[in-house]
Length: 436
Image (cartoon, rainbow, N blue to C red; front, side):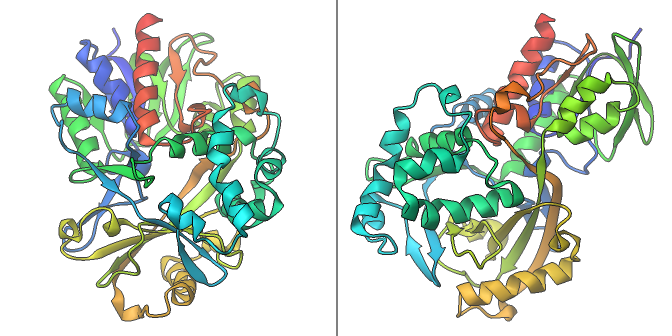
């Protein structure tokens, strides 16, 4: 008899949600995670004085629905806090506020006509109801005719280059369409954007999920990397970790496609493995700065200056109070890049020095003495690349094995990554398993 009904690989929000749903139904569940904490990319770390911070910046949108549903189910209703957010753009050596329609009208980096074209873009985008009708186009092919070459060059091209690096000209239009539609729906009655955060941070929520799974007699194991599987032609029977071999009736794998491909490479159908390998990824380097002063009053600063190698500067404590971080200011600098890029190989100290040079240019008042502490986090598979006609080749949740499913961030399409959709997919894959 199998020791477990279900083994789930990965304790991100997809894996934890699936485990929570299945354990509530009375199934004996074991979640296996290679990291030392839950949450996946929304996991946390501690500074030396115990202050907990997320490794990579996160927030929710006020129109997300799957997060509040889960929070309510966990008895934590009221712990989702909504704040207006201040957004801006760094372009041509100066900061521009872009939080409201009035800010857009003042954005003199564009001509008045181009400002109007940018402003009505969301309304043009909303007319598209069938995303598959634009999936064969790249973002440039679709967006440039809508907003004009100047708007595309100043506003969108730098962001795409920072977000998708060497693949910026390959990403299909659906990615941008979905972003614009979603962001257009997060505005308050004054036109400003409202975002949401969880009281105590995402780490508190992921730990609550772990507690709930364990209360349902489930098991969650950390620091346990899966190295392979044992399988017959039709069924996986065991997973192999560094520490042990675990038997189960059913399996769910939630890591990125390349990790899953490596786990199954010796037993999986070569055609299926090649489908997993087909999806490209970029790495992410995220510098977390703990400062004794604020860089600016902006939460989300898009970096549109082509000479700057970051997609954005996210000052987290302009969104969540400094009182939650012992009075410190927390800022993130994010860079997406191919792992072959020389910058990927920089040490933490080298990357800090690399970043501070640009911070000094962006914020001339900044002094290195402001840095109380820092940490560099890197993930090899930080962003999947949705090329044209992505829906035709992205692997499904099914695998060649009757008792095994996969559910990853790259399958959330046409939405992009995010904890809200990770929770949705966790429920979906649990339902699929129960109905199998």
